[in-house]
Length: 341
Image (cartoon, rainbow, N blue to C red):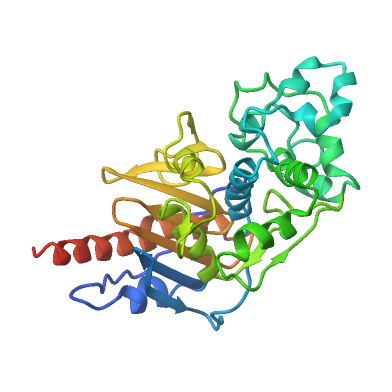
């Protein structure tokens, strides 16, 4: 999440046209939304809504922003399953041995888990000139680990793109292959995702934070959510272990955040909230990119929107307060209908 001045929501005329069996894809909340690109909703692996807006194509590779982090989370789990990484308790010094000589010995003991929970204490890009300065660094990953700690590792939650990029560096060093190649072999390929574009940072590593991002179709993003909904299984094969999926959907430790759905908490690069008393796990990217998993409803919602800094926060709030309630109402209606009510 990039910090921006909060912009007021514009006045939209909202039409909830999801009665009966009709899908809400023609509701004004969607069709009159100038930012929306694509919306894909599936229930129990079956697509019930797949609609494009504002001239988009269904096969367009969309800028997924910080959903990149959530995909990295799945890839880290696969790497643990396959023995490339021992566990989330493995320490940063394993992949950055120069930290053994750092004047602050606490850096050696920063864990992978702390990085994924945004609680590493490492330098972040909101300092010293901001995001532009960070993106212009010739070796951003090395720079981050060399800077003085901002807090004691494990104690302070601070959303940190610079530290999260280290996940891609770690995965590459641990597996011996670039993150995109690892994803092709162990995630995208097995899910029959044929196209993607994973941008690199200046250090030569595929972006791990979503600042330059992985580009995927909204349908592909929905597949990744469905994989988690189905406990790591796809077409009879295990792609990621049920144990890791459980860690994502039901984490033992979460940290409060000030953004996303009201009351959200963060863990392992995913958000968690109780929405009308029901558990919801979701990934979120700048400008209103969402991958929402509703375990009890067996539903996955994937949405891509325009990436525009001037309206990004507005787009996120509009999804959370207008679009998602529309979909939630429709899902609840379908549940009642299936139950014979």
